Image (tube, rainbow, N blue to C red; front, side, top):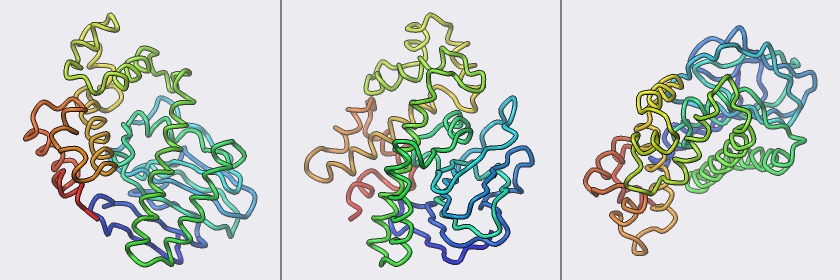
Length: 287
């Protein structure tokens, strides 16, 4: 895929790995870390602008069956896994805007990524009609903005992408796609509701859903993660948002950590640095 302009944004270390690519592609190929997946193909017959969100992170485990092809219309937003980018069957010339975002920056699990990549957000949908043009405008403006402004626009784009992802996952939750056991969806909702509680453990989750701890671990293992990693990731994401939202002076780092279930400020600081490459105070105080 040939791109006429590339905007790399991380002026803020927290945005490390976020890129916005926009331009007129020649050979139709999405940015990825491997060859296009032969059994995943996106089709389009009209020229125009198409938006793609490439999700970086741990490769998602392959599903039992892959869709033979998915049709797109101009303005649609399509999520894809950069480890398994789909092949494109598009007109000779079209405009592409690609947002490359680490999946953990959006708080996504491998299961979430697999679900998101199956169904594009249609430009004709309620949320697509609202956010598709905003994402397009942000990409164009960021390409001409000075670094501090471009960084802020990239952050706004990430938030819009997170909103799209949450909407898609929420809309698809009741159907248990890809053969997902219905109990797993209920467990995920339960964890979200009880995320701040110190007593949220595999044992308490299994007890609340009348299953064994062993079966609980198997459910998450089958989706490429673990109960503990998923809870930790979600808690860190909420802490990071709180620290950025409230800033210095309104709430201490220990208070934010305690609000989301961390009992030790030292442990919180250590896992935060491991996840994001900086301390909680560095993240909070970054202008």
